Image (cartoon, rainbow, N blue to C red):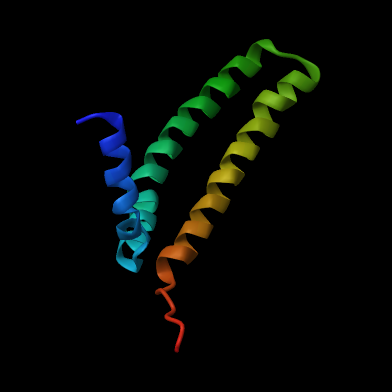
Length: 96
């Protein structure tokens, strides 16, 4: 199978991925699998930042101790809340 056949096959079945069930499954997958894994990586990153802050002074110490960890944690908090809302809300069908 060459790349053109694969591309055409994917294009033919793209509508399968925009069905409500597929979208809901994607959102649940993001919330249940991807977000926790990304948070784990972010926790390692922020721990390393705080560790490196010991050798920093001035604004760089503030950046590594407070600013970047807060920014990362805030981004994950926001992402989590948005995903929570999207997973919780059932798809609304438009009436004809």
